[in-house]
Amino acid sequence: MHFMNSWATADRQTLLHFSVPTMNTFRQYVQDRDNACEAGGILLGTVHGTHMLIEQATAPTARDRRFRTFFERLPFGHKEVADSRWAATQGTVRYLGEWHTHPEDHPRPSGLDRAEWSILAAQRLDKRPMLAVIVGRKSLYVELVPCSGVGSILACIC
Image (cartoon, rainbow, N blue to C red; front, side, top):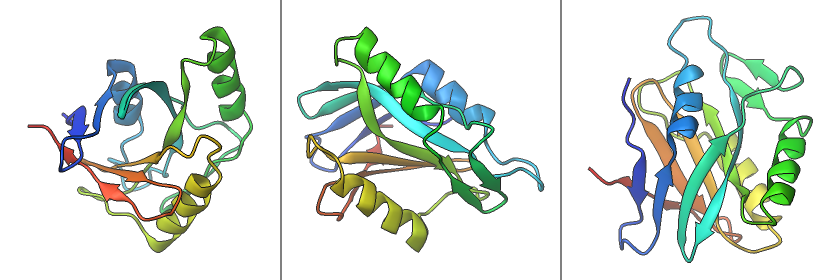
């Protein structure tokens, strides 16, 4: 399985790059079996102007709610990782957004996904767009969701 790891907005004003460890986490949870449950976590990384380097995707915890077509990330475990990385890097590595899987080749967000992303984006204290990623079996869906809730779909740099 090979996912593209560099993405850009249509105007190329924002570039994203997913690190190898981040991509490995995504690959580990691809729903490639009929009984595989959705998985997800948070995305951590650094900001360089309008660009982002996604350095880590947290893995689902035992407390997260995982079903075939539903994932609910609970704060336990994910928040501690984010707080630890923030402190260890003096605020350089920060929360960038959310990721989860879908049991489809080329994923698209559901209404519930969009509603949750809008809520999370509006809660960002720094008012930066929230990164939302859905991991499918063959491709990723990547979107930047500003605090207004209306997102920008990113295209892979091929």
